[in-house]
Length: 72
Image 1: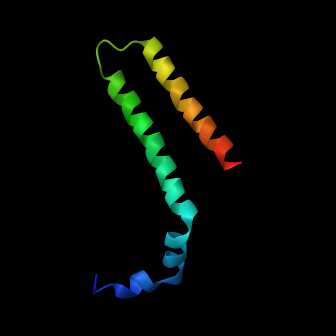
Image 2 (image 1 turned 60 degrees about the horizontal axis):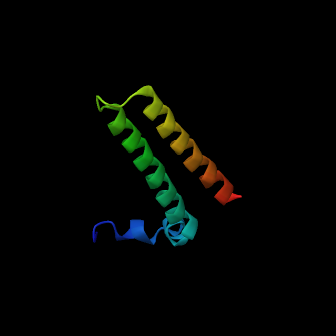
């Protein structure tokens, strides 16, 4: 940290970190990645069938849609 203190003083980095939307966008991406992870883990189960896969994709699509509508 002491070796690279000038990196933390960079104006562009400070503006990004102080900009609330940066953290909001990271949270949204994290939520979407969690849904994708759940879908992949469920697909690996033997008792999981194509109906479950389809429902999981619908759930993921609704999450994307809700995110897009929230951004408008």
